[in-house]
Every structure is written in C-alpha cells, then in structure tokens.
Image (cartoon, rainbow, N blue to C red; front, side):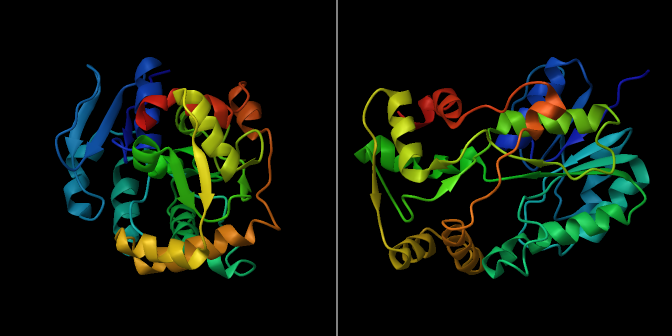
Length: 283
C-alpha cells in the first residue's frame, strides 16, 4: 500500500512538531505548513500557508492524503473555508481537539473550548474521514513557568493543589500518527490523558529534580493571576475562561485513563519524564 503524504499544521509547535518528527522517523512522506521560514530535518517539505487565509493553502494541500489540523485561533471563524479546502484535496483529517469538548454547559468556565466543538462538528459534516483527538491538559503549558524558574527558582501561580493528568506532546503525537496512518481511529474521539494526577506544586518540584536545583511553588490569589495574564497580553476571553475552569477542577478533576497505551501499545509518559525531556528549557 502506498504511504500517505501528510500535511501537518502547527508544525513548529510542540504537538505538531512531534507529529512531524514521528512521521519522518517512520519514513512517511510529510509536509509542514509554515507561515515563515522554519528548519526541519532533510526530507520534510516545508510549504508556506496560513490557516487564516484559506486561499494560501492550495500549494500545501496539493497531493496530500491526510491533514493533521491544529486550530490556532480562539473561535471557529474562517474554519468552514479551511475545512472545505482540505476536503477538496485530502480524504482524511485528524483534529487536535480538547478533553473539554461537550462540557461547556456543565462547566461554563470551559466555554473557551466551544471552538473545538464547532470544529469537530464542521469536520464530521464534511464527508472526510476524521478523528478528533481529545487530550487533557498539555504538559508543555508549564513551559510558561520557564523564565521564572530560570531567573528565580520560584513558580508564582494560583491553585497549588490543582492536580491534572498532564499529557506529554510525544504521546499526543503517537496517537495522532496512528489516526493518520491507519484506519483504527476513523470516526473516533479518543480521550487521552497522562498516567496520573499531579498537583501544580508537585509539577514544580519535579521540574526542579530534572534541572538539579530546587524549584518552589508560591501560590498567588486568582485575582493576582488574572492581572498577570492581562499584563502578559493574553486575550480577555482566555483570561476569563481558563482560571475558573481550572478552579473547578479542584473538586472535579479530569479523568485518568490508559487510552494512550491501548492505542499505541506504549504507556503514557509521566510528568517526571516530560520534565527530564525539557530540562534544558528551564535551566
């Protein structure tokens, strides 16, 4: 059987980059969608295009069999034209969605996931073969602590006892590659998680162990965290949704499952492993 040619969007990001790496290592022809120049291993074709400009995607989609789609915006505006463009060239799309899909009514603070719900609906209605990969929180989001860790050795953030089954980007990529290159996940919405609930305080400590010096978690109030996010330039709708959603998880944590192992044959990587893999980012 001829191997598919796969277009990876978000190819310079943590998850998309891991998908590119895994496909390339497996010898699967892979093309990376980029907005500006980016370096990839020999054999990975970089093509310029922008999901915000569907007309710019024609060259990237030429000859493509499947697309790994990472949506970079906080609304589904423009998504119908992008899905239409993909549908004219490819036969399959694997969408990086969210474990929060479907919970918006129960957890109003998670309304930020509404665009994922809308994207899933558009993709399902497109006639394409599809998979919606629904991960819990990304371990790589803790890279937002990196500057503080490097300069002070202290993480100042709210909700020290918030425990989440953060998932390694390599595990998200492994599941995505199964969906892109085999038929086992066609029409599926796998919820994938890290292997255990880890508090934010413990996450900081594990980063400290990985870099060989202590990292202390200093809890701040939610109001202060909101102001810090605003000063950092985060969109208001993100600020208003993320922290309430996280606070709600104190009493209603995300589930933990073994879907990564079931799908890939390899257990999900721990946060300790993620911290070791990314130690250089925090030193």
